[in-house]
Amino acid sequence: MKAVYIKEFGGAENLEIREVENPSSPAETQILVRVKTSALNRADVLQRRGFYPAPKKFPERILGLEFAGEVLEIGDQVSNFKPGDRVFGITAGGAQAEFVLTEESLLAKIPDNLSFTQAAAIPEAFITAHDAIFTQGDLREGETLLIHAVGSGVGLAALQLAKTKNIKTFGTSRNADKLEKCKEFGLDFGIVTETNSVESNPKAISEIVQNKNGGRGVDVILDLVGAKYLAANLESLAPKGRLILVGLTSGATAEINLGKVLAKRARIFGTILRSRSAPEKAEATAKFVEDVLPLIENKLIVPNVDKVFRVEEICQAHEYLESNESFGKVVLEF
Image 1 (cartoon, rainbow, N blue to C red):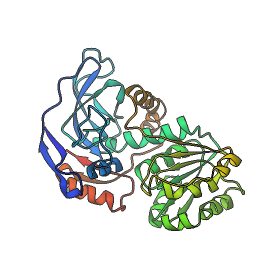
Image 2 (image 1 turned 90 degrees about the vertical axis):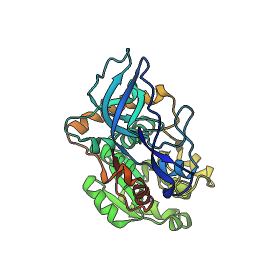
Image 3 (image 1 turned 180 degrees about the vertical axis):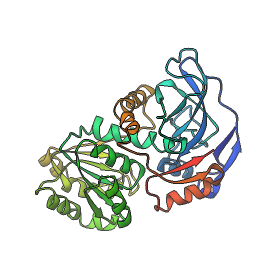
Image 4 (image 1 turned 60 degrees about the vertical axis):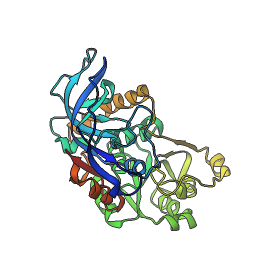
């Protein structure tokens, strides 16, 4: 089968389309999917650079964490899918290939109103966002949410999901145009930021938040940026606020003011989807199917497809993602 392959760890030029061995036939609860589309994630860039190795039993040099396609073959204990079904889902690696072998519990049926291209933009972003802000962050109707990098795939997913619960939303981006686009998805207040300015003046974001939120901070912060935003996050949280750390694009190490954490009775926790156990991923997928899929079927939320590339254009796709020009998801078509 054809697959996106890392020749050497480093720049985008080290990617190629290579013929590799097909997956084995599915075991009892497994499903073999013919991949039609797959979306890019920041994790792909990190893995390509050699900074984010795949978990054990997943290919080290074949990228891809999400996919959409058709069921080709099923294990003898699979009960919810049959050959020919249109499905999408998450995996810990290897999704950017013509075939992927996965567990039944990590798949969902694609709604009839979505194409394969639209479907590929959903699983990683929406499962991550839903799990982070609702399951872990316990975000409730009528509360407030601040999303850093709101124009990203996960950021836009979180924004759309929050608006279905009557959540007041704040979002940050270095790009003012992206914030304007986010208003079409329900963003209430956009904040233009620069990493250096946030680090030097942590109160800058909190002052805007409090000015627009009756003098109090936000209940939940979804941070897709990382270390340099930590002080600003603590300033921006309301009492009993929850800070959810997802991305580390600005670094992984930061100094923390524990006094702020104590005074606000804040909760800080990190989340990652890729390295979770299969049962944990299955649980997150099941909640996605129950809570999010009906919203997609009823068009209350929509996929965030920014740009589509043929799989043969994988180098250009990575370069585009790294340019930070993307708004939402970058999708590959096989």
